[in-house]
Length: 549
Image (cartoon, rainbow, N blue to C red; front, side, top):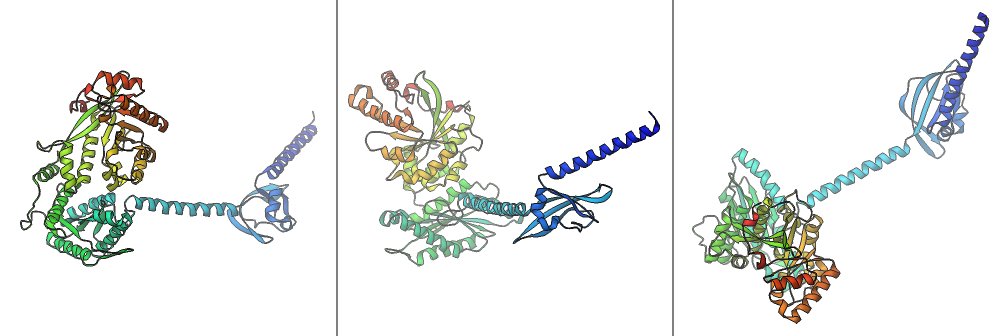
């Protein structure tokens, strides 16, 4: 082959390569999902795809002037009129050679919708932030009075303790309990009682400094924290609170009611500020005020105010002040088919020889209006004692309905370990202690169940109707009262009654545990009736030995 032939062949091949490149460029233009324009200084628009025509309009496409200034553009935001609307376009350009002429390959993207979407995203993020703030606030604020709740008070106490230690300043707590509040609820209804609580909260707030804290921690109890306050000054604040509540009756829709409060003032121990112990001391002083005639202020170690309390209450309070208030025993829950233990019921005993049993110290606590405090401490003691049990062991704990009403769901949940498997804990509520419409327990029951804590209705029997509690509260477990089981195998009427109860439990989809099993005859009959779990002295009495893993 001659040199001329070689040159012609090379030129031919080069031409083919150039055409291939140009064809590829055209495909890039036409196939791009974005608007693409090739424009030159001298010729205007050289090539454009359909998307670019829609974005820029036909007028721009026919322009003989350069569409974009010939300068390096990497993401400029350009605005083009398009009829009645304006398209907000992002333009990215790169220089290319187009058929020997310098040109620009420009990619266009309509960012109007993108910007609108981003604005909507920003708006939603703002709303989400507001909602998160509101939820965070709700976990620390009492819904009725808009004061702090228990968790909010604990946060404030922790924060102020840090400041107090650094500054060497005093810190004082005041507990205020309304006098005879239950009589207001009984006589005028809970709606009137709520009005009294809200008005009391407003009176307390108006009597405090901006730096003070106030929380509603129980049905009719308010806890006030006074930072950087000496004890003498705290006494004056407590007296101011007492007068503010007592001086002006509260107006209700059906009249006016006179309200008073009994108060206890306690300095916070910075070395060991155990909140439970602080509350015990404050409750004790409130009881002093109530025993002295109500509408009074008492201070810790005030010799001028005697404590005319019963001996039983003295023992209970003394035990509560100690760190080892309660000891815990357990009673096994067994699977009847093979009599193997599957769980334990944890029971509290007071560390006092005279008032060890629950019937004794709960009776004293109820009379002294500290039942919720004592019951909640029992719950925490039982949870603590259960930590050494094998993970698969079911743990049953008893709680009074009044405690579930007075203690917020979040505070109840704080009593349980954060790391726990679903179903490992079960809260038992005695059906015999539910008074009236059980729907007042629904909020707490639902909150516990949603966090994997099971609910059992305990002491279900035949002496009173239990259908309403079972239907409204939807428990996971029904525990049949021992009085219905002991000796029932020799009584046909009791057998029929139990059969009806078991049919009801089956229709509700609840598990059944029979209590009070003492004889093998009872065991065999319960198994034949389809009862799967039971408790009773047949397998031993409550003991602390089973709490050792």
